[in-house]
Image (cartoon, rainbow, N blue to C red):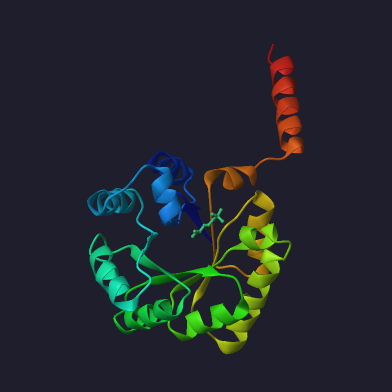
Length: 218
Ligand code: E4P
């Protein structure tokens, strides 16, 4: 399973990169706004900086909701770097834009996936990735991980190549459960990734090893 970081924060991206486990980056308009990035020029420059930091796929989201607008935007975004992936919302014109990209070998990430039906149509339109939002589904007391499981089963039966990119990850357990459910990629902030390596017995065990070593070498 690939690990993407879900942020537009360059320091966090650098920190994740230094762990040596980073395969890519996802952003969205909210994450760009959180970093104070606004205006077309600044947004494009910021994506370029992210693409310089990581060699893996970097999702850049279109803002338009009509096909012509999306195509205009994605034609500019795809020129930023070879690792740019165009993030397109799961709406009618978005499906047209997914097909447009598939015909031209432009990588895509279909975002805001909340049902197996949406995942089916996105794969049919040739999406490279689809992003089911686990946390937001859990927020409304449905089961986000179960959606990933259903999509994984459907894609296996139908032999789709589209990769399942589990998004809206709220905690470390979501990462583990998404991996078990068949996600090809998880994207999340740095904290849930770092949370994976924590265990109290590791800390207790290490403290004992170091204490014993100190005693023996006093
Ligand atoms: C990533 O591609 C998604 O936009 C992101 O994971 C959404 O996360 P949120 O539900 O925490 O905003």
